[in-house]
Length: 69
Image (cartoon, rainbow, N blue to C red; front, side):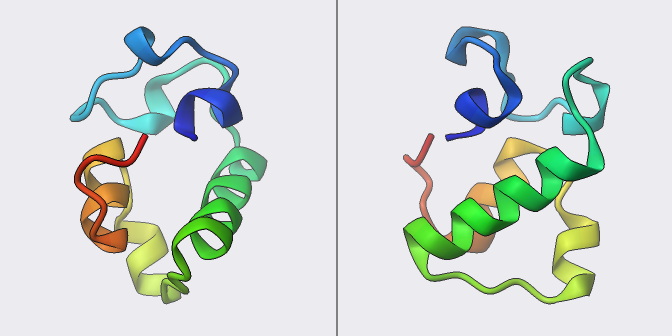
């Protein structure tokens, strides 16, 4: 999911790398990722949780999907 939104290959994305460090990252991409989490996993993060989500690992922890892409 993250790779599709960021237009990157899955192998190019590291669990603990700040998403903002990718050249394709924008605030719109963040909104798209949050919307995808809501749609795919039924998770509706608070503003505080959204601000704290900086890496793929953070997103996985929030949705409780350790194996989710």
